[in-house]
Image 1 (spheres, rainbow over the protein chains, first blue to last red):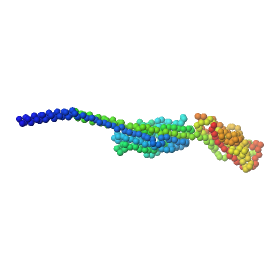
Image 2: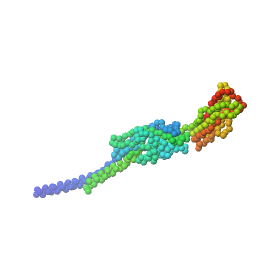
Image 3: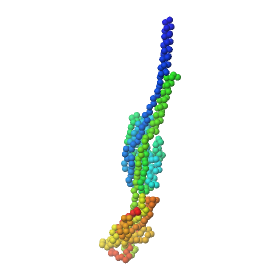
Image 4: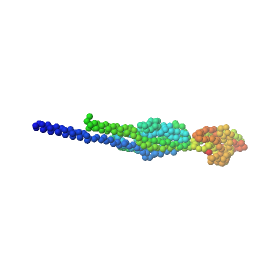
Length: 187
Length: 185
């Protein structure tokens, strides 16, 4: 008899546990949370956005008088971004600067960033990087490896520009104008 | 499969997928694109370059035009943005004493010049475009220029002589300075 009662108790407890388990299983809800902080990347020319050579000299190196001061800021995920790169480029390399019918190609415009990659004057004739720039009309100015320590950071660099007319046909008198584009891209 | 396990698995997959999506979004992240305006100016130029600084006449012959100085080669170069002609002017600052030997003077009217096949003419004309002096100047050439020829140069031989027809000079060394200057008109 005692065994019988004990068995009934066990049976009842088993039912209760089973019912409880089912009830617990039915109430559990899983909500997957995914919040993405978008990366931020900006380039600011803090000075030198207008560069002027007042009197160009033929067959000579003509330096633009002041550097272009560029501040690059980023906030990126270090596990998802290897590098931050700054690119300078001309949209039409064959016509980097134009005056009348005379065109000065980007191969005659040199850039130097002593704190970056082209520490010596280098023609702006590289190809685009990561979809930024133009074929034969670009120059990578710096590439920063991203890690936990610099996932949110900024840097300021000076870009020196030069017009190389050594061996170039004499320029007709007049004004020559062009636009150098700057853009950063992550890789 | 137990419902609880199934949901945990589903949630995990969702999180993994969400993470994957974020990674692809941060590669190729672009910044804004500021620009730098570049301007370079090539100034207009006009230069005159003689090949020698001195022209000499070894022996003066009175009452004659056979008094030729050694020729001078002159290169005139221009790089312009406007104008219709480039003119080269030769002139003496004081026409009455183009050459002097102390108090003995030879006026500019007795000094003649020519370029190329032109006839000799005295340096006794007026200034041109503000270049030269009255009665002491001679336009050596006038070169038409236009948009297609605003960048150019030419080299000419300048022949100089003394026209002493009807003139007798006092013996001695006569020296003077002929100025050359180009002007755009």
